[in-house]
Figure 1 (spheres, rainbow, N blue to C red):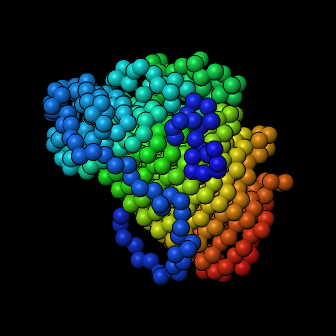
Figure 2: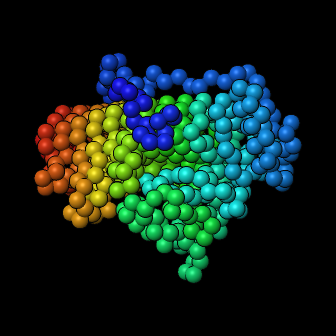
Figure 3: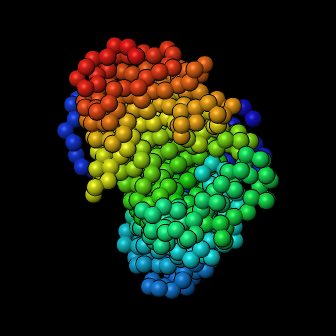
Length: 472
Protein backbone atom coordinates (compact mmCIF):
# COMPACT_ATOMS: atom_id res chain seq x y z
CA UNK A 1 0.00 0.00 0.00
CA UNK A 2 1.40 3.39 -0.93
CA UNK A 3 1.78 6.14 1.66
CA UNK A 4 -1.62 7.80 1.98
CA UNK A 5 -4.36 8.64 4.44
CA UNK A 6 -4.86 4.91 4.93
CA UNK A 7 -1.29 3.99 5.76
CA UNK A 8 -2.02 4.85 9.39
CA UNK A 9 -4.68 2.23 9.98
CA UNK A 10 -3.89 -0.75 12.19
CA UNK A 11 -1.44 -3.08 10.57
CA UNK A 12 -2.85 -6.34 11.90
CA UNK A 13 -6.56 -7.07 12.21
CA UNK A 14 -7.70 -3.65 11.01
CA UNK A 15 -6.05 -3.70 7.61
CA UNK A 16 -9.45 -3.80 5.91
CA UNK A 17 -10.83 -0.93 7.87
CA UNK A 18 -9.94 1.66 8.07
CA UNK A 19 -18.17 25.17 17.83
CA UNK A 20 -19.63 31.88 23.80
CA UNK A 21 -19.42 34.81 25.32
CA UNK A 22 -18.14 37.39 22.87
CA UNK A 23 -14.89 39.21 23.56
CA UNK A 24 -13.51 42.31 21.86
CA UNK A 25 -10.56 41.27 19.73
CA UNK A 26 -7.91 43.34 17.94
CA UNK A 27 -7.64 42.69 14.21
CA UNK A 28 -5.19 39.93 13.30
CA UNK A 29 -3.43 39.22 10.01
CA UNK A 30 -5.15 36.67 7.80
CA UNK A 31 -3.56 33.48 6.49
CA UNK A 32 -3.15 32.93 2.77
CA UNK A 33 -5.42 30.47 0.98
CA UNK A 34 -2.46 28.21 0.28
CA UNK A 35 -1.58 28.00 3.96
CA UNK A 36 -5.16 26.97 4.78
CA UNK A 37 -5.07 23.84 2.66
CA UNK A 38 -5.26 20.52 4.49
CA UNK A 39 -6.06 16.93 3.52
CA UNK A 40 -8.80 16.85 6.15
CA UNK A 41 -10.53 19.83 4.54
CA UNK A 42 -11.23 17.68 1.49
CA UNK A 43 -13.26 15.11 3.40
CA UNK A 44 -16.88 14.55 2.45
CA UNK A 45 -19.41 12.96 4.80
CA UNK A 46 -20.76 9.46 4.27
CA UNK A 47 -23.98 9.21 2.26
CA UNK A 48 -27.03 7.21 3.25
CA UNK A 49 -30.05 6.03 1.28
CA UNK A 50 -33.25 7.97 1.89
CA UNK A 51 -34.85 5.31 4.05
CA UNK A 52 -36.04 5.88 7.61
CA UNK A 53 -36.37 3.27 10.33
CA UNK A 54 -38.15 4.93 13.30
CA UNK A 55 -37.38 3.07 16.49
CA UNK A 56 -41.09 3.22 17.43
CA UNK A 57 -41.75 0.83 14.55
CA UNK A 58 -39.66 -1.75 16.41
CA UNK A 59 -41.29 -1.37 19.82
CA UNK A 60 -39.58 1.65 21.38
CA UNK A 61 -41.77 3.92 23.48
CA UNK A 62 -40.90 7.22 25.18
CA UNK A 63 -40.96 7.31 28.97
CA UNK A 64 -39.31 4.86 31.32
CA UNK A 65 -39.30 1.68 29.24
CA UNK A 66 -35.98 0.17 28.19
CA UNK A 67 -35.63 0.62 24.42
CA UNK A 68 -32.27 -1.11 23.98
CA UNK A 69 -33.65 -4.10 22.09
CA UNK A 70 -35.95 -1.99 19.90
CA UNK A 71 -33.05 0.27 18.87
CA UNK A 72 -30.89 -2.76 18.10
CA UNK A 73 -33.66 -4.21 15.92
CA UNK A 74 -34.01 -0.95 14.02
CA UNK A 75 -30.25 -0.80 13.43
CA UNK A 76 -30.17 -4.40 12.22
CA UNK A 77 -33.08 -3.80 9.83
CA UNK A 78 -31.49 -0.62 8.46
CA UNK A 79 -28.18 -2.38 7.91
CA UNK A 80 -29.83 -5.38 6.24
CA UNK A 81 -31.75 -3.09 3.88
CA UNK A 82 -28.54 -1.45 2.68
CA UNK A 83 -28.50 1.54 4.99
CA UNK A 84 -30.51 4.61 5.91
CA UNK A 85 -31.53 6.52 9.04
CA UNK A 86 -32.53 4.99 12.35
CA UNK A 87 -34.70 7.79 13.67
CA UNK A 88 -35.13 8.72 17.34
CA UNK A 89 -38.36 10.76 17.36
CA UNK A 90 -39.38 13.43 19.84
CA UNK A 91 -39.46 12.27 23.44
CA UNK A 92 -37.16 10.73 26.05
CA UNK A 93 -36.08 7.17 25.29
CA UNK A 94 -34.15 5.05 27.78
CA UNK A 95 -31.49 2.70 26.53
CA UNK A 96 -28.38 0.73 27.30
CA UNK A 97 -25.51 0.31 24.86
CA UNK A 98 -26.01 1.05 21.16
CA UNK A 99 -23.84 -0.70 18.59
CA UNK A 100 -23.85 0.84 15.11
CA UNK A 101 -23.55 -1.18 11.92
CA UNK A 102 -22.36 -0.16 8.46
CA UNK A 103 -24.70 2.09 6.52
CA UNK A 104 -26.56 3.30 9.61
CA UNK A 105 -27.15 6.95 10.49
CA UNK A 106 -28.51 7.19 14.04
CA UNK A 107 -30.55 10.38 13.76
CA UNK A 108 -32.09 12.29 16.68
CA UNK A 109 -34.74 14.89 15.88
CA UNK A 110 -34.52 18.19 17.75
CA UNK A 111 -36.79 17.21 20.65
CA UNK A 112 -35.41 13.71 21.05
CA UNK A 113 -33.31 12.52 23.98
CA UNK A 114 -31.53 9.21 24.36
CA UNK A 115 -31.00 8.69 28.06
CA UNK A 116 -28.44 6.00 28.80
CA UNK A 117 -28.61 3.59 31.70
CA UNK A 118 -26.23 3.94 34.64
CA UNK A 119 -26.49 0.21 35.35
CA UNK A 120 -23.06 -1.10 34.45
CA UNK A 121 -24.58 -4.39 33.30
CA UNK A 122 -26.19 -2.51 30.40
CA UNK A 123 -22.72 -2.29 28.81
CA UNK A 124 -21.95 -5.99 28.69
CA UNK A 125 -20.57 -8.05 27.08
CA UNK A 126 -17.10 -6.56 27.12
CA UNK A 127 -15.66 -5.10 23.93
CA UNK A 128 -12.24 -4.21 22.63
CA UNK A 129 -11.40 -0.62 23.49
CA UNK A 130 -8.48 1.68 24.26
CA UNK A 131 -8.61 3.06 27.80
CA UNK A 132 -6.39 6.11 28.32
CA UNK A 133 -4.08 4.88 25.58
CA UNK A 134 -3.90 1.17 26.47
CA UNK A 135 -5.93 -1.58 24.85
CA UNK A 136 -8.15 -3.81 26.94
CA UNK A 137 -11.47 -5.61 27.09
CA UNK A 138 -13.87 -3.38 29.01
CA UNK A 139 -17.45 -2.18 29.20
CA UNK A 140 -18.89 -1.18 25.87
CA UNK A 141 -18.91 2.56 25.21
CA UNK A 142 -22.44 3.92 25.32
CA UNK A 143 -22.43 4.17 21.51
CA UNK A 144 -19.91 1.87 19.84
CA UNK A 145 -19.03 0.60 16.39
CA UNK A 146 -16.41 -2.03 15.65
CA UNK A 147 -14.86 -2.24 12.18
CA UNK A 148 -17.86 -0.66 10.43
CA UNK A 149 -17.95 1.80 7.54
CA UNK A 150 -20.29 4.64 6.56
CA UNK A 151 -21.77 5.31 9.97
CA UNK A 152 -23.16 8.46 11.58
CA UNK A 153 -24.77 9.97 14.64
CA UNK A 154 -26.64 13.12 13.58
CA UNK A 155 -29.50 15.48 14.39
CA UNK A 156 -30.24 18.21 16.91
CA UNK A 157 -31.29 15.89 19.75
CA UNK A 158 -29.55 15.09 23.03
CA UNK A 159 -27.40 12.18 24.13
CA UNK A 160 -27.55 12.01 27.93
CA UNK A 161 -25.16 9.67 29.73
CA UNK A 162 -26.74 10.51 33.13
CA UNK A 163 -23.32 10.43 34.81
CA UNK A 164 -22.78 12.40 38.02
CA UNK A 165 -21.95 11.92 41.67
CA UNK A 166 -22.87 8.37 42.55
CA UNK A 167 -23.26 7.52 38.85
CA UNK A 168 -19.91 6.76 37.15
CA UNK A 169 -17.98 9.90 38.19
CA UNK A 170 -17.23 8.73 41.74
CA UNK A 171 -15.27 5.80 40.31
CA UNK A 172 -12.49 8.28 39.54
CA UNK A 173 -11.70 8.07 43.26
CA UNK A 174 -11.85 11.81 43.98
CA UNK A 175 -13.99 13.45 46.63
CA UNK A 176 -15.01 16.28 44.33
CA UNK A 177 -16.96 13.81 42.22
CA UNK A 178 -18.84 12.06 45.00
CA UNK A 179 -16.29 9.43 46.03
CA UNK A 180 -15.71 8.69 49.72
CA UNK A 181 -13.02 6.51 51.32
CA UNK A 182 -14.04 2.88 51.24
CA UNK A 183 -16.11 3.23 48.08
CA UNK A 184 -15.14 1.61 44.78
CA UNK A 185 -12.72 3.41 42.49
CA UNK A 186 -10.75 2.74 39.33
CA UNK A 187 -7.35 3.28 40.94
CA UNK A 188 -6.16 -0.30 41.34
CA UNK A 189 -7.58 -1.40 38.00
CA UNK A 190 -5.95 1.50 36.16
CA UNK A 191 -2.61 0.55 37.75
CA UNK A 192 -3.12 -3.07 36.71
CA UNK A 193 -3.98 -2.09 33.15
CA UNK A 194 -0.94 0.17 32.93
CA UNK A 195 1.33 -2.60 34.20
CA UNK A 196 -0.16 -5.10 31.77
CA UNK A 197 0.43 -2.66 28.94
CA UNK A 198 4.04 -2.25 30.02
CA UNK A 199 4.55 -5.99 30.26
CA UNK A 200 2.93 -6.67 26.92
CA UNK A 201 0.22 -8.89 28.42
CA UNK A 202 -1.90 -10.33 25.57
CA UNK A 203 -5.15 -8.48 24.99
CA UNK A 204 -7.23 -11.57 25.78
CA UNK A 205 -5.92 -11.44 29.35
CA UNK A 206 -6.52 -7.72 29.87
CA UNK A 207 -10.09 -8.27 31.02
CA UNK A 208 -11.84 -5.56 33.02
CA UNK A 209 -15.53 -4.61 33.28
CA UNK A 210 -17.51 -5.73 36.39
CA UNK A 211 -15.60 -5.00 39.58
CA UNK A 212 -12.83 -3.13 37.78
CA UNK A 213 -14.60 0.26 37.61
CA UNK A 214 -12.99 1.54 34.40
CA UNK A 215 -15.61 3.96 33.05
CA UNK A 216 -16.60 3.66 29.39
CA UNK A 217 -16.32 6.39 26.80
CA UNK A 218 -19.55 7.84 25.45
CA UNK A 219 -19.18 7.52 21.67
CA UNK A 220 -16.42 5.35 20.24
CA UNK A 221 -16.08 4.15 16.66
CA UNK A 222 -13.25 1.61 16.72
CA UNK A 223 -11.44 0.61 13.54
CA UNK A 224 -14.09 2.28 11.36
CA UNK A 225 -14.04 4.11 8.04
CA UNK A 226 -16.14 7.11 6.99
CA UNK A 227 -17.61 8.40 10.24
CA UNK A 228 -19.86 11.43 10.74
CA UNK A 229 -20.90 12.86 14.11
CA UNK A 230 -22.94 16.00 13.53
CA UNK A 231 -25.25 18.36 15.40
CA UNK A 232 -26.01 16.36 18.51
CA UNK A 233 -25.78 17.61 22.09
CA UNK A 234 -23.82 15.42 24.51
CA UNK A 235 -24.22 15.79 28.27
CA UNK A 236 -23.21 13.94 31.45
CA UNK A 237 -20.67 11.52 30.03
CA UNK A 238 -19.05 8.78 32.15
CA UNK A 239 -15.61 9.58 30.69
CA UNK A 240 -14.29 10.75 27.28
CA UNK A 241 -17.13 12.00 25.11
CA UNK A 242 -16.12 11.36 21.48
CA UNK A 243 -13.26 8.91 20.98
CA UNK A 244 -12.64 7.75 17.40
CA UNK A 245 -9.97 5.04 17.58
CA UNK A 246 -8.03 3.57 14.61
CA UNK A 247 -10.47 5.27 12.22
CA UNK A 248 -10.04 6.75 8.76
CA UNK A 249 -12.06 9.70 7.43
CA UNK A 250 -13.83 11.17 10.46
CA UNK A 251 -15.97 14.32 10.56
CA UNK A 252 -17.16 15.81 13.87
CA UNK A 253 -19.26 18.86 13.05
CA UNK A 254 -21.56 21.19 14.98
CA UNK A 255 -21.54 19.05 18.12
CA UNK A 256 -22.40 20.69 21.45
CA UNK A 257 -20.76 19.11 24.48
CA UNK A 258 -21.48 20.00 28.11
CA UNK A 259 -20.06 17.51 30.58
CA UNK A 260 -17.92 18.54 33.55
CA UNK A 261 -16.97 15.19 35.03
CA UNK A 262 -13.50 13.67 35.55
CA UNK A 263 -11.62 12.76 32.37
CA UNK A 264 -14.48 14.29 30.40
CA UNK A 265 -12.46 15.12 27.29
CA UNK A 266 -14.66 16.48 24.52
CA UNK A 267 -13.18 14.92 21.38
CA UNK A 268 -10.08 12.72 21.31
CA UNK A 269 -9.13 11.34 17.89
CA UNK A 270 -6.82 8.44 18.73
CA UNK A 271 -4.51 6.95 16.08
CA UNK A 272 -6.85 8.19 13.35
CA UNK A 273 -6.17 9.52 9.86
CA UNK A 274 -8.02 12.33 8.05
CA UNK A 275 -10.06 13.99 10.77
CA UNK A 276 -12.12 17.18 10.59
CA UNK A 277 -13.50 18.79 13.78
CA UNK A 278 -15.39 22.00 13.06
CA UNK A 279 -18.06 24.36 14.42
CA UNK A 280 -18.24 22.55 17.76
CA UNK A 281 -18.78 23.92 21.27
CA UNK A 282 -17.05 22.46 24.33
CA UNK A 283 -17.71 22.82 28.05
CA UNK A 284 -15.80 19.90 29.47
CA UNK A 285 -14.19 18.55 32.62
CA UNK A 286 -10.90 17.84 30.87
CA UNK A 287 -9.29 18.77 27.53
CA UNK A 288 -11.81 20.10 25.03
CA UNK A 289 -9.90 18.41 22.20
CA UNK A 290 -6.90 16.15 22.66
CA UNK A 291 -5.10 14.35 19.84
CA UNK A 292 -3.72 10.98 20.88
CA UNK A 293 -1.96 7.85 19.62
CA UNK A 294 -1.49 5.44 22.54
CA UNK A 295 0.40 5.34 25.79
CA UNK A 296 3.95 4.15 26.47
CA UNK A 297 4.82 0.57 25.50
CA UNK A 298 1.32 -0.32 24.36
CA UNK A 299 1.14 2.78 22.17
CA UNK A 300 4.48 1.90 20.63
CA UNK A 301 3.32 -1.69 20.11
CA UNK A 302 0.38 -0.52 18.01
CA UNK A 303 2.52 2.20 16.45
CA UNK A 304 -0.21 4.07 14.58
CA UNK A 305 0.13 7.85 14.40
CA UNK A 306 -2.73 10.30 14.48
CA UNK A 307 -2.35 12.32 11.28
CA UNK A 308 -4.00 14.80 8.94
CA UNK A 309 -6.21 16.54 11.49
CA UNK A 310 -7.98 19.86 10.91
CA UNK A 311 -9.72 21.66 13.77
CA UNK A 312 -11.50 24.91 12.90
CA UNK A 313 -14.18 27.36 14.01
CA UNK A 314 -14.71 25.78 17.42
CA UNK A 315 -15.47 27.44 20.77
CA UNK A 316 -13.89 26.15 23.96
CA UNK A 317 -15.74 27.52 26.98
CA UNK A 318 -14.33 25.34 29.75
CA UNK A 319 -11.88 22.50 30.13
CA UNK A 320 -8.34 21.62 31.15
CA UNK A 321 -6.91 22.58 27.76
CA UNK A 322 -8.49 24.18 24.74
CA UNK A 323 -6.57 22.04 22.25
CA UNK A 324 -3.95 19.54 23.38
CA UNK A 325 -1.72 17.00 21.72
CA UNK A 326 -0.88 14.15 24.08
CA UNK A 327 0.01 13.17 26.56
CA UNK A 328 -0.82 9.74 25.15
CA UNK A 329 1.05 10.16 21.84
CA UNK A 330 3.48 7.25 21.77
CA UNK A 331 2.48 6.33 18.22
CA UNK A 332 3.25 9.85 17.01
CA UNK A 333 1.20 12.78 15.74
CA UNK A 334 1.73 14.61 12.48
CA UNK A 335 0.08 17.15 10.18
CA UNK A 336 -2.28 18.94 12.58
CA UNK A 337 -3.86 22.31 11.87
CA UNK A 338 -5.96 24.28 14.40
CA UNK A 339 -7.46 27.52 13.08
CA UNK A 340 -10.06 30.18 13.82
CA UNK A 341 -11.00 28.94 17.28
CA UNK A 342 -12.21 30.98 20.26
CA UNK A 343 -11.46 30.17 23.88
CA UNK A 344 -13.39 32.67 26.03
CA UNK A 345 -12.41 30.80 29.17
CA UNK A 346 -15.56 31.20 31.24
CA UNK A 347 -18.67 29.11 31.63
CA UNK A 348 -20.77 29.37 34.81
CA UNK A 349 -17.69 29.69 37.00
CA UNK A 350 -15.59 27.26 34.98
CA UNK A 351 -12.89 28.13 32.47
CA UNK A 352 -9.75 26.91 30.75
CA UNK A 353 -6.45 26.03 32.41
CA UNK A 354 -4.41 26.10 29.18
CA UNK A 355 -5.12 27.41 25.69
CA UNK A 356 -2.76 25.31 23.53
CA UNK A 357 -0.59 22.42 24.71
CA UNK A 358 1.70 19.75 23.39
CA UNK A 359 2.64 17.48 26.29
CA UNK A 360 4.85 14.43 26.59
CA UNK A 361 7.67 12.83 28.59
CA UNK A 362 10.38 10.16 28.14
CA UNK A 363 8.03 7.31 29.02
CA UNK A 364 6.01 8.03 25.92
CA UNK A 365 8.33 8.06 22.94
CA UNK A 366 6.81 9.16 19.65
CA UNK A 367 7.20 12.32 17.59
CA UNK A 368 4.87 15.30 17.19
CA UNK A 369 5.60 17.17 13.97
CA UNK A 370 3.99 19.50 11.49
CA UNK A 371 1.60 21.40 13.78
CA UNK A 372 0.05 24.77 12.97
CA UNK A 373 -2.01 26.82 15.46
CA UNK A 374 -3.43 29.88 13.70
CA UNK A 375 -5.95 32.63 14.47
CA UNK A 376 -6.66 31.51 18.03
CA UNK A 377 -8.22 33.96 20.47
CA UNK A 378 -8.28 33.18 24.18
CA UNK A 379 -9.65 35.09 27.14
CA UNK A 380 -8.30 34.23 30.58
CA UNK A 381 -6.61 30.92 31.26
CA UNK A 382 -5.66 29.94 34.80
CA UNK A 383 -2.29 28.37 33.93
CA UNK A 384 -0.23 28.65 30.73
CA UNK A 385 -1.31 30.27 27.49
CA UNK A 386 1.12 28.25 25.35
CA UNK A 387 2.84 25.09 26.55
CA UNK A 388 5.19 22.78 24.70
CA UNK A 389 6.71 20.41 27.23
CA UNK A 390 8.64 17.16 27.38
CA UNK A 391 8.33 17.23 31.19
CA UNK A 392 4.65 16.35 31.44
CA UNK A 393 3.90 14.72 34.78
CA UNK A 394 7.39 15.73 35.96
CA UNK A 395 8.81 12.58 34.37
CA UNK A 396 11.73 14.22 32.64
CA UNK A 397 14.52 11.69 33.03
CA UNK A 398 13.13 8.38 34.26
CA UNK A 399 12.02 7.03 30.91
CA UNK A 400 14.18 5.78 28.07
CA UNK A 401 11.90 6.53 25.11
CA UNK A 402 12.51 10.18 24.50
CA UNK A 403 9.79 11.94 22.56
CA UNK A 404 10.30 14.71 20.03
CA UNK A 405 8.41 17.92 19.26
CA UNK A 406 9.36 19.53 15.97
CA UNK A 407 8.06 21.96 13.36
CA UNK A 408 5.41 23.85 15.33
CA UNK A 409 3.98 27.14 14.03
CA UNK A 410 1.89 29.43 16.27
CA UNK A 411 0.56 32.34 14.26
CA UNK A 412 -1.92 35.13 15.09
CA UNK A 413 -2.48 34.01 18.67
CA UNK A 414 -4.02 36.31 21.27
CA UNK A 415 -4.57 35.60 24.97
CA UNK A 416 -5.92 38.23 27.35
CA UNK A 417 -4.59 36.81 30.60
CA UNK A 418 -2.62 33.79 31.83
CA UNK A 419 -0.54 32.69 34.79
CA UNK A 420 2.39 32.14 32.41
CA UNK A 421 2.59 33.17 28.78
CA UNK A 422 5.18 30.81 27.29
CA UNK A 423 6.12 27.49 28.85
CA UNK A 424 8.44 25.78 26.38
CA UNK A 425 10.58 23.08 27.93
CA UNK A 426 12.57 20.48 26.06
CA UNK A 427 15.21 18.14 27.49
CA UNK A 428 19.01 18.29 27.50
CA UNK A 429 20.02 16.46 24.35
CA UNK A 430 16.41 16.44 23.15
CA UNK A 431 15.45 20.04 22.39
CA UNK A 432 12.13 21.11 20.97
CA UNK A 433 13.07 21.91 17.39
CA UNK A 434 11.71 24.25 14.78
CA UNK A 435 9.27 26.56 16.60
CA UNK A 436 7.82 29.63 14.87
CA UNK A 437 5.99 32.35 16.83
CA UNK A 438 4.42 34.82 14.41
CA UNK A 439 2.29 37.73 15.67
CA UNK A 440 1.47 36.30 19.09
CA UNK A 441 0.24 38.51 21.94
CA UNK A 442 -0.31 37.63 25.59
CA UNK A 443 -1.59 40.75 27.26
CA UNK A 444 -1.18 39.95 30.94
CA UNK A 445 0.76 37.29 32.85
CA UNK A 446 1.64 36.75 36.50
CA UNK A 447 4.88 34.77 36.12
CA UNK A 448 7.95 35.02 33.90
CA UNK A 449 8.05 32.84 30.83
CA UNK A 450 9.89 29.54 31.14
CA UNK A 451 11.82 28.66 28.00
CA UNK A 452 14.71 26.22 27.76
CA UNK A 453 16.15 23.56 25.47
CA UNK A 454 14.79 24.89 22.19
CA UNK A 455 16.47 24.84 18.80
CA UNK A 456 15.78 26.69 15.56
CA UNK A 457 13.26 29.19 16.93
CA UNK A 458 11.86 31.96 14.76
CA UNK A 459 10.12 34.94 16.38
CA UNK A 460 8.23 37.78 14.74
CA UNK A 461 5.76 40.15 16.38
CA UNK A 462 5.79 38.44 19.80
CA UNK A 463 4.49 40.51 22.72
CA UNK A 464 4.10 39.41 26.36
CA UNK A 465 2.93 41.82 29.08
CA UNK A 466 3.38 44.72 26.69
CA UNK A 467 7.02 43.81 26.03
CA UNK A 468 8.21 43.04 22.51
CA UNK A 469 10.30 39.87 22.38
CA UNK A 470 12.60 39.32 19.45
CA UNK A 471 14.25 36.07 20.48
CA UNK A 472 13.84 33.21 22.95
